[in-house]
Length: 402
Ligand code: G3I
Image 1 (cartoon, rainbow, N blue to C red):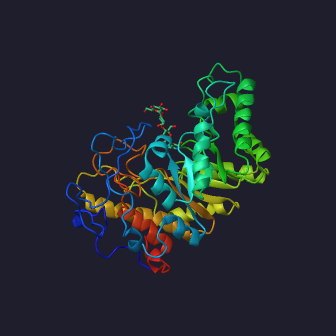
Image 2: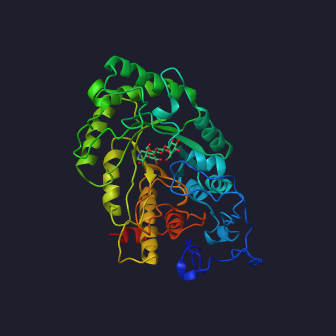
Image 3: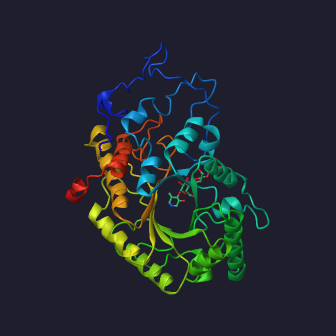
């Protein structure tokens, strides 16, 4: 079943101006939809803020009235994913969640899974050794529950975003006790409410060896297994995930992670899955067959596969037009979603953000938007690519992929 709209994509410049909902445009509102004033400027380290109130800001409705017709009966990523047994997730930025009603609406409508982008990181939740600051993380979890979404906790143990009070002068036993307290506190605080935790993040380097870090220096390689044991003892029902980047290719890093996870599994460490972050770009993406081949090595250990932080910016290619890049991006998202559909162990695809309005990806000139929805909350060709992968029954095209 095709999910491409027949009359041009809403973000396809060839069909500009964007299609107008029934009723037509009104003077001063060329989109023909209701303008909405938003609360003040947003700053969460994101590249763009929501329009400020009092500036005459008029923005598009997040989802056009005819949008659901375009994408067929399944309608939304979360519904289409559900039919495949796949959670479709998004990383959630706190500021956008609290200040941008369009963002909230799109997140709730389209996604079934939520990962706090930053607000569960150790440095933010424990601003000093005796103080916990979980209010914002609590808010994200509560809003997700209200929207019927599952939550992925991110990330308990990471060499980055350590609290300021942990440094090279910290005694190993003090660091170990603090890390254990942090893991236990987070997992017990959210016991029964977190579907899966990224327990350890980025512990392996490009060569496949354990990444040199304060954690490795002070605690030795055993900190990885310890963290999984601590988490499991606080919430035996939560899925526990090892999460890392740049290992979606069949490369040394993937081999190193596979070797580490094999040891963990064989030692009886409670680990249930592996997250492939996939911060890739349209010109640097593994071929579908290679990606699946790679994932199957991990699945053979009995691990679930998460695509945990997918974003696919269009990178810098001066010769390419925006139309070409958008189509390339559509194909790239379609491929990743399709490999997940075709791989029984793959249970979720999470994009690292909701709309191009708020993304950590900056610095590319021009064709940079890495996500499924535009800065104006419109579905991009990439959205239809993802939907196509989730909805289409005919896999012949999949087998024809390079
Ligand atoms: O908290 C301050 C805020 O007070 C201040 O107003 C703002 C000004 O820029 O900065 C805020 O902190 C920033 C934070 O994002 C919130 O926006 C940090 O400086 C910035 O370093 C932080 O970046 C995050 C980065 O992880 C480091 O934690 C990105 O948003 C987030 O997308 C990124 O996510 C990581 C995953 O956790 C792990 N995998 C890679 C992925 C991408 O780098």
